[in-house]
Image (cartoon, rainbow, N blue to C red; front, side, top):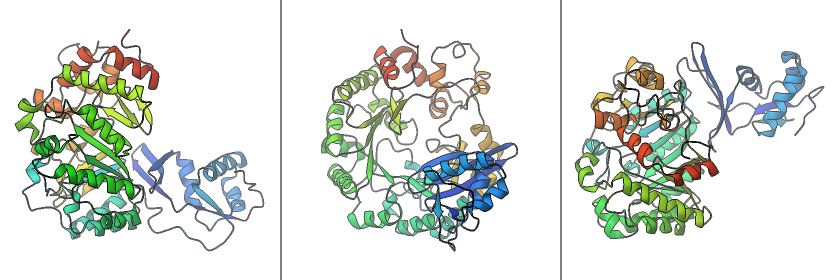
Length: 476
């Protein structure tokens, strides 16, 4: 769409689908235009951000020409914004920006998302639950406290939250919380649930505010005997299947999470078939993290790395043969993001945990941790009942984790094994949770990922990445 800006008295206004957010931390500045209903974000230059702020329905294109005084630059920006439906060419005067659409920039490090455990309560007793310690506690943040936190999230220019529990649908005030998030124009990217207590009325309420939210549902078997045993709840399988069907009927996209264990290792192909029958969008399978309840069951229920490798290979072969009917993520071997097959590409200047670099997790009692899987006392960086979120986010303990780079970690590893390893660009020294569990040191390598890549990252995995992702010359 091309607009002639000269003598154009139309008054451009930021689309109601978009928010402008900014974080300024010294010389590090982040400017974002965020479509909060469809979870699409664009990183902006400071100039583009300032120009979009002026698109408030009060200044005409012609007036913008005089302010910017650079016809070529203005034409480029404005027409690009119009093509993205980021601004509206509104000839009707009098429209105003919506409340919380543009807010004061946050003076601190950029926070993209919050992984928020709204409750520790759950109706199941899963063998792998990393939140098991909070299940019997009764100190969840109450609604008044949550209301204050949501206001703070807005002030910190947070783009979106992921909501989970426990079982999130056990909160009686869940829909009041959703309304608050909506009023502050904070997106919800996904909701995690075990799927057993979903009903159409609840889904209709969510649809009013967040029609495009993604649901993550756990499914650990293709039969009641397997799933119910792992979840320690008779009837869980049938209720979960019904929940997934209701989600699909209501037009929500569903991702199925499967925890790979000895209980279901012979049912993986059956689970794959079931996910297709249920019309899910994505299937993710991986071994549980060594935290919470899984520590008590790991020795008896874990599959070996050779078994994990063979299972992933079988899934990939079947998935390829059937023409990629769903999106898949297979542990550390193969994954997709936004329909693109990828592996991270690390160098020594990369952050160790790039995925959680700009996010944090809030636990049911208000404890704040760098990552949801690090729900351990020694990783708590502060509590929202005692400190502001900004104090915790910019505090030394949080920054020591978030600002950790591979070159910093390599300096703490007392051998050259990783420095000279061909897999360093794709393993990035692995996950800090496994490092902490197996090595009792968050600044160590991830021994499980290291063994998987060096011994079991087969030619089949490499071939798939060459075809669908980056062309790595790792395995000849």
